[in-house]
Length: 137
Image (tube, rainbow, N blue to C red; front, top):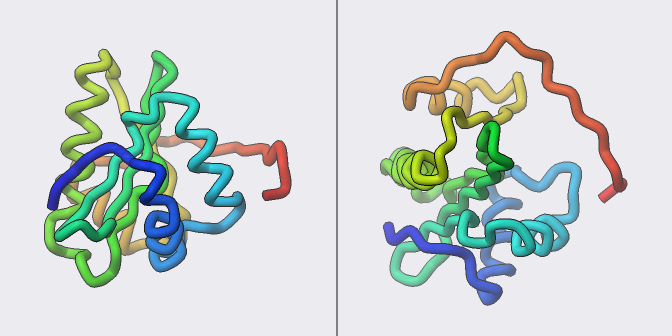
């Protein structure tokens, strides 16, 4: 898998991947991409094999904590080390930026994904995650 930054020509493939992985839930994926392109666009990672977008990982860092968003690997490529490789690159980038901790959120009912992150050294923090939607989609 080659890891690179997102290009505008990736939009349709990225959105299709997010839908395939069940990552499109509350927001408009096109708006999510536009927003990310305004803030550290180089931290919107794409995994590709033979020119096909098959994984994504969107990173954010405001100077205190980093966040991983929309990490997904196409089902046909899961369990092949691709998610692990994307996370390793995300950690490398965040360390280089001076970040001390990475956060991410997973639906409490998604035991398979929670187990994936736990195998990679992530642990549940004793916190309550709160959110407020500023737009409906």
